[in-house]
Length: 56
Figure 1 (cartoon, rainbow, N blue to C red):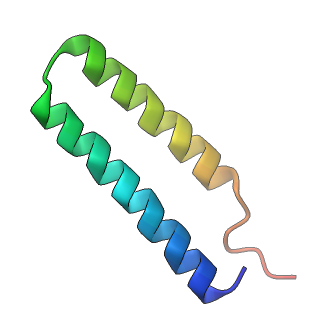
Figure 2 (tube, rainbow, N blue to C red; figure 1 turned 135 degrees about the vertical axis):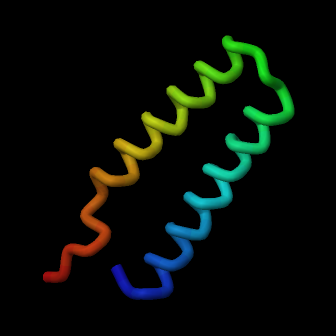
């Protein structure tokens, strides 16, 4: 993975993260908060599982 791909992936991930953060502030119900946090944690685990910094 080159630098451009890495930067694009990080940018996309940050956009998704901030979107969920905005959703949490906009709707403050426990159910929506729980679902959004679960989604963030799932995406974090999936995101970190990728070998982003691996160089062949």
